[in-house]
Image 1 (cartoon, rainbow, N blue to C red):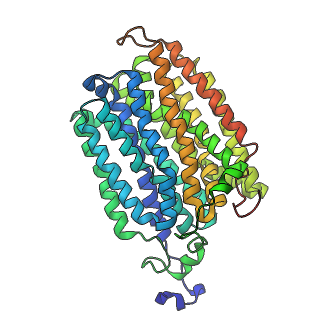
Image 2: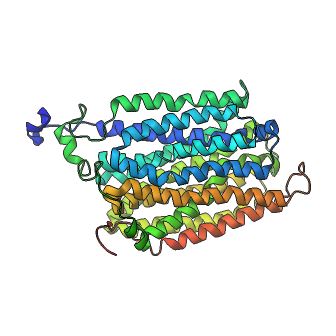
Image 3: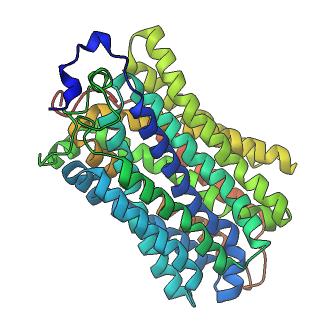
Length: 439
């Protein structure tokens, strides 16, 4: 037992190690999205260099999301069992390597393989970050922590097009990916030597702060078996999976096809397009933060976190759907991107409710449950880019023809319909009852 445990808690001011942990998880969230989203800005150069079509590029985008989704559950389970420290070290180094390797590819097959392996590494990110939040943060602070975590992730995606556009002014797209890979390597070294899976006994944590961490022992890594049968029997879990599918379907457009849309449908130049491309994900970051704040505010007012999460998440998805329909009729480029930004803001108001539900419902299995939700959700990220790519390809008469604006409009209307399905799910989701309770 650490020496500080014998001191009276009333005489100790809590340390703030948990905020260092929050800074670590938030920064990795940003790095994850930066290294994921930069390919969208480089896509036209990659297509030209490798001689691949838009439909083939859609499959490349989806290859990442497919493996990312596929590895969510095993990576989350390993974090629950072995602890997030070792898992995150391995996966961050893995995806950093394949970030660099994206610049070494020579044809469609090698590019697709590289993005598959890159996605497998990133699949371990958010289930294990959620596990860390469940262990290190007091339950009263977890919603806000998730809001900050996802806000930084969205902002990472927001600056990714500008980061890549700036980098491409100095080096070609191949060298750009090698430079970006260094972000993850530096983070992994700092994290591994400071972080511990168990706050109890950490040199930066005193007894008073440990007393605040109500999940430090209950949610620590353990050999407990994941109740997969209960996952499939719980209506709320199934609907969480479905609503996250709907969210990811629309969100992945921003980090895959949006730069191409701005160039070809709205004739925006590279540098301006990079700034405009980042606006929806920037607004999404604000939505993540605002969603956590709004749920907490409504919970305080109503005394009912279940009602607060349902109201914020369901209402936000409904407004996102309506906004996406209205966007298709806006001709001005700046106003159109403002509308997309508002749709992204509304969609990401849901994040704190969805991931908060994973922590409260999952408990010691938060890693596995959040991984399963992210996996099922990101299947929407697999489907979305492929659907858009197919619509665009069908609208072309030759490989050099730019698709008509009507093709893009169809893609946005389909997204609006998917958002509407996601909104309906929240009528029936119970986002608070633990797996050990209820039916």
